[in-house]
Image (cartoon, rainbow, N blue to C red; front, top):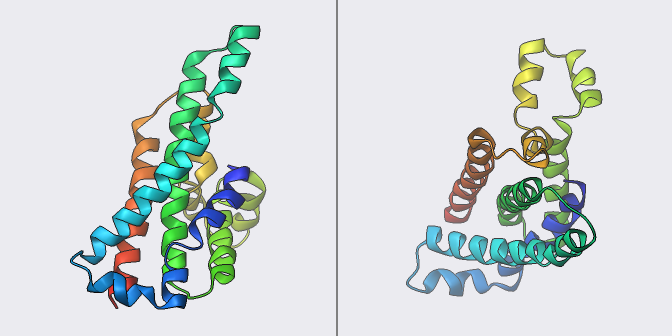
Amino acid sequence: TWLFLFLIPAAGMRLWSEEKRTGTIELLFTLPVTTLQAVLGKYLAAWAFLALAILLSFPMAITVAYLGDPDWGVLISGYVGSILMAGAYLGVCSFMSALTKNQVISFVISLLACLILLFLGLSIFNNALSAVLPTWAVDLLANFSFSTHFAAFTKGIIDPKDVVYFLSLAGFSLFLNVVVLER
């Protein structure tokens, strides 16, 4: 989760901000594609790139298997969780990239948005929030954390609610991305 905090915003900062800065977004939208198709195309291409980057670490698992006896269930669920979490991070970063013309600003606001979504699950952050918010509100906010939903994957559990969380966060971010680009 912490490595993705810097890697994914760096990969997603150019998705739309560079198109806006160079003026090629007008050319893109004159092509016979809808805004949704353009957003999904860019998102799926970037997600495939990130999934490939994650899967390229698999030779380390093979090396561990050669030297010892790893728990393959935990390894596979970790890879599935990492790819899903990368998709959720990327959805947020794509939305933030659509909000600005500058790549650096896109990186910074993507980093901050993802940092907030990561911190929501930390007990120190929740304790600080409980001083100002009621307990039910703190618990509700903690359910939106990347770390809370990724924890099950690190234990070898592919829980459908965590899969739905990552996919729905990515989907909602892409919906907001389409809304921003159409205005």
